[in-house]
Image (cartoon, rainbow, N blue to C red; front, top):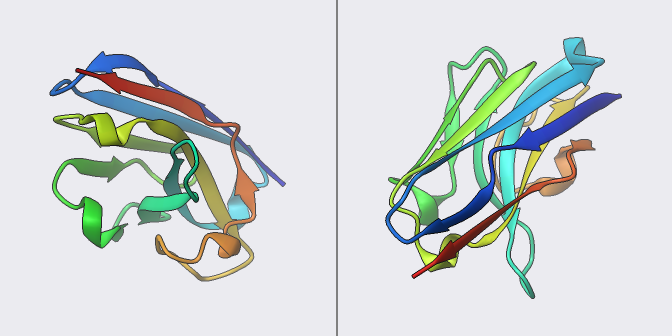
Length: 125
């Protein structure tokens, strides 16, 4: 089992930036991929970005490319840089990991078998 702890969320204004962090511990040797997901009030959880362990290959949700950058070794550390925040970015952001599987992407949330508790990002005008 992999334990994931997110940090870095907060309340910011439109146009500002945030860098979210995720620290992984436990059985990380089987991790294939890590990703960031978000869930806004009343909406389904959606994928933001994913990174293949080792950091060589990144995947971004088609609708979110440009302002988000995923970084880290995707085994013990994962980061999400969000620039030029908008009100629509307000959500709980979750870190997740794929273990004992070879999937890496943003669409198949069910393939991620370890999830953190989330960090809240609130953006106001």
